[in-house]
Length: 151
Image 1 (cartoon, rainbow, N blue to C red):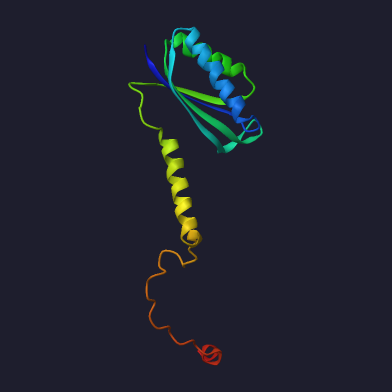
Image 2: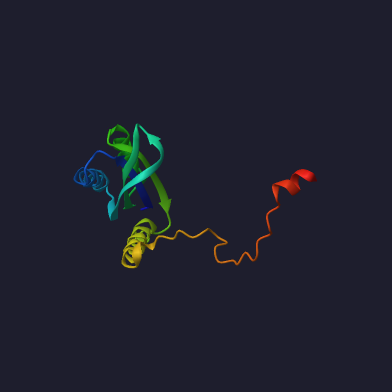
């Protein structure tokens, strides 16, 4: 059977339990049609690049699917009907990744960086940008207004 990676976005105002219920519903559709779900990852609420149906954020979920094309088509049909699903994308892949997805690795890395910053004085840098370490040397003397007017 072909392998798929499927990501869907649910509205921001649904709870994480409702997102889990959506995942279970779509998992049931795949299993009824002879497929199986290898892995499910909830990526949490993330901001959208633009508004979709008046939503600025969405719950993201990834499913690794091993199923016939008809099962995936039926799941996508039910997603189109469901009001809570904003968008979905299914991609056929050669093999599934066994480790965490990049999105979860990024979230772990961001959490670790935020924790480290809090430990060492907030991590705020109020420096002057990319040239802040450069010695600017002596300043030229200002021209006097009278000298500027005579020229």
